[in-house]
Length: 378
Image 1 (tube, rainbow, N blue to C red):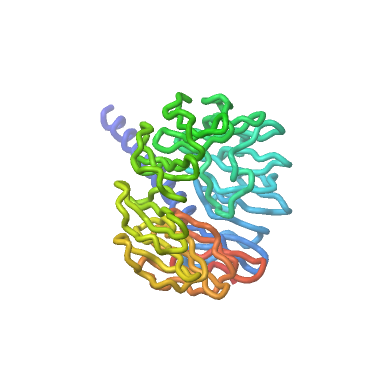
Image 2 (cartoon, rainbow, N blue to C red):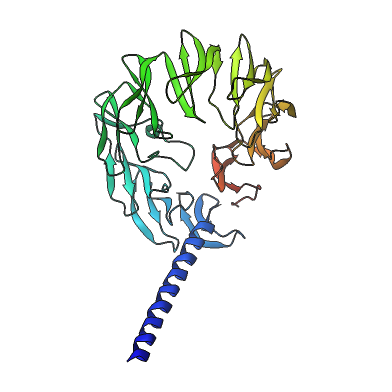
């Protein structure tokens, strides 16, 4: 009897292991599939450009959560990694799925949020709207819908917050509302800005002309046309003394005095002198600046790392930054080395998590490259 039971248990364990391996292979397969353009038709290939799903769609976007948006007969739907239609094409627009298993789509004339089964979780209506820029659809294929489990919504001209189930957590009452970060959100009421927690409790009173971006323990605020920073308790951390200021990233914030920009750290210490036409925050401690009409890059010590020579630049997302010269775009690494040649009409917005980046390679036509410039079209 024990032998039979042991054999049964072994079979169950073997089945479980095989099932897990199959799931792992399926997930891995889905992650490796890349949107591939052949003429005016789209399919999916592997990293060696071998076509895995035939080029039969009018448009396609990357796989996330094992599903990819595809367009057929003028409508968007979602396929699985085997090329089977998982969510029937019926949307005018469609984003990739988020980590929470939700996607933004346009159904008839309304924006909706759907789950991985295609069920509508939330829907816009005449009086009920999602927080912009969601309703203006980002160029980026990847959207963050529910930051820390909550999303701003507008109901009859007032903003509140809902959870992924569509349940109202904070009643609509604000003139404007930002996403949550570290359990705090910056909101506007009666023409002034303040800060609330995830229960809707007012943490910092409505007293500022401007407030934005709670990052690295500090909130950028403005009052009487001067800018500075407060901490999460509303205490002044850096005095309101600047004519403009940006949020902190990696202990670095660009600030403006008079006509010129410099930068400070979180103690308020100046680390970049006020001598540039523009300074931008960025990741990886490499910061774009503008001088004499051209862009270059500063290092974490505030010294010039890449001489100003570009007409336009994005910020660094991970180890890549898009740069433009003479109307053409490419990408550089954090040392300023050209990784992707400057030959594209445009490089669409991307983040450090974006594995395949959308580019316009000829007028009116876009496709994808990887972060090293491998092209996925013919």
